[in-house]
Image 1 (cartoon, rainbow, N blue to C red):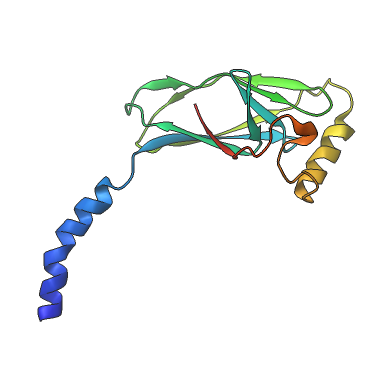
Image 2 (image 1 turned 60 degrees about the vertical axis):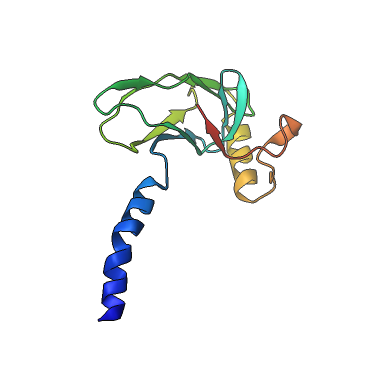
Length: 140
């Protein structure tokens, strides 16, 4: 009985600590087709797709516009994305797939790049020394 009383006494404190332990955030994952396009926000390289970015939570029921995202592939293909999302619940998560323009030539260069990343031949995540030691998480 003393053990149960101890748990019962400490449980409300644990619940309070657990409820305050993390800041709510809204996140978005950017992925590309073909895989592993270079993701830029405001002209700054953020990393390779797929890339998950978190921002502070926004008011539920409101629309939020994320920064414009530009994706570059090694072939020189470029695509942009500007999104506005309805925040439906705290800690909402969005998933966006950005596709390479079909009319851009040299798709085999981009497919080869994606294969090299998967095989670990591009281990820093950034080819050609654009930016070293990036972390595959950013903030908007």
